[in-house]
Image (cartoon, rainbow, N blue to C red; front, side):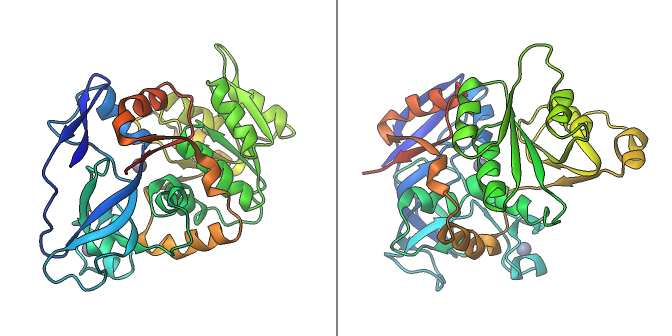
Length: 332
Ligand SMILES: [Zn+2]
Ligand SMILES: [Zn+2]
């Protein structure tokens, strides 16, 4: 089978590999679509992998079952959670695999076939298009959806999203769908345009020397946004979120990043600030994501590019250039 090999130094080749064989509790999925994730850019640009790839968002048809699998059958249309759990602990019983002490990560999904735990497969209705299927079962929509479960207060009216890559743009559509007013912040004019198209009411194109928190205050009657979401994965941006959020507001961390200095007194206590971390999504959140799609969440609008697997190098190059929304690979 064909598999994308992320060799590092921004080099992608299409390699040949044997179709994987399923171990106990595992299944093999014949890929129809996989999605590129911003979190793969580190591996792509830097050290690479000895073989295969970090692809972890995909949907397709189950083609083989390992020993003891009873929850899915050959021929099922599935999307997958790349994070699976032990299957036995209290968190796993609730479908909260990311909290399992023994969670596992399955990658190598930019390939014609991939392996995953049966308990990490979501059944997909036949009428859901493939480009939607891969998003409503992966972290492309999953991260913003999981985040939204922590932002339920009706007092939240205005949300500033810092960083308009695939996750930031997905935050825009999810929060817009919930009736919030969105301010999109990014350095890329292309991504600012995408954010406007997806429903950001206001946008801030970051240029050298621009005081971003002051710009957000100017758009919010001098108070600051009710919520600032850090989706750029940069400490400077994280710090700006604390300066741009209103008193009593919430800062959300979506972007993984290095440590940064924060002051308990200045950044939290004296302004009554709440900070929220949000990682991946819970397996049990899929039915609600499917329902949100059914109720009009414009999931497919996140997809800006689709390529056959043979053009994976071009797909990664475009995403790394910072001009895309969600980029998909298709398999014949
Ligand atoms: Zn991801
Ligand atoms: Zn577990």
